[in-house]
Image (cartoon, rainbow, N blue to C red; front, side, top):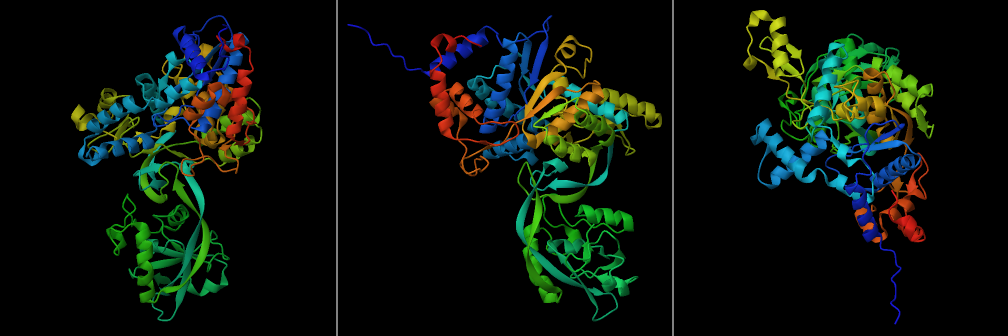
Length: 598
């Protein structure tokens, strides 16, 4: 009796078997030799991350490129790794400790970091394991983490180098403050959303004039408690008669000057603006220009402090509700209108950003940006699709200094040490700091206990902008065989939403420390959306679990399906039927072509 042969293709069995075979034989590993190199560095996912559809698309495209290069005879290497993700990881660890009844504020820095490293070792490698399931042919023997000792040393080297070149400085500036994460974030980490708000019209009495008032319009009435001026346009005839006079701030009865500046738009609201220099970047700039007092009325967590005089300890949004009846009772509330405006949210915590004056570390970007702009505009680096050149140029031509300090414990600690005389020194380590301090201030007779290291850490992107250099140890050892062989890398495949966070800064870093661009081509993927054109997200519940998809259709089936509709820079409208089509296509390949190929 003839035995029936089961010809149905089982993707799980085939993929697991051959991926193990490839790994056991180190087929993805590369060492410099006499062949031409072809290198790709992975956009390092957050150590907190798990595989989502965007990762599926991005890493599938990288795998296509690296496997093609191997088949063409290149010595190809695809370097994997993860990013330490300061804000996201610290939040995860804080929540993890809270579940165990441990509060961060009860721990020393060293105790917290011990817990953080334990968490990272236990949970931090999930996404890399998932990429193996995807079939990613990375050189896993080269896996990097942005806080590996040699990677951290490179970050410190770069900070010290930029400081010594005068490109890093410390100063009080208006920053974007995240009241939930309790840290500053960069301009690029602020997401603006259009909201349906209210516009509150409030009148301020002219000092010494019983029935004379100026009415202003504001979306943030709680900040009235920190007002230090009212500003009008110098050519606005409505307010010409008030020049040289002062007004009284409602509730707190503070006398403030009336100032005139062309910054004011006469057509907006009433043409008169309340000025709160501590809580608005434009007000801050006007405050500097007109020498205004600065009154900070918020604590770091977004509650009102004693400077507000009223509603002390209340959350800013609760204070907004509470101050309205107070203004109304005092006779200062004129009217309230519906109003649509854009509000900044922290990309990391989705908390409303609070502009805040803060002492932070900054990196001067002007000199770094110009050669990086030229490299793209003159064609040394090609963007695919080319439309992103305009986006890149606009940002680079209007670049601001980068706030690089974060008020966290998880991350690369700022290598600055403070002295008893309130001076500071920047050095690679504590011993070097003491030596420099003794040379600068011999009269202090300093010892190690006199120096206190800065509590802040660096922005996560301050390490990942070095990625194409640091994975090949090109910062610490700029003439080593690997950096000379693999750098510059061949192509970067990434999402356009980090064009400023990462792409631009990597170009700056490559030109600054190696005098070479980090890659010749940048391929921007689109966003994976559902059939209704909605961005896939956990909140909407429209994002399938990639692992479950691969279990159902096989890794090759899912990847093949995604590639059917993934034009560069354009969004991919994902439909699970694409995966089924991909699986059916894979099943059509002859068995000899399915097995053993790499």
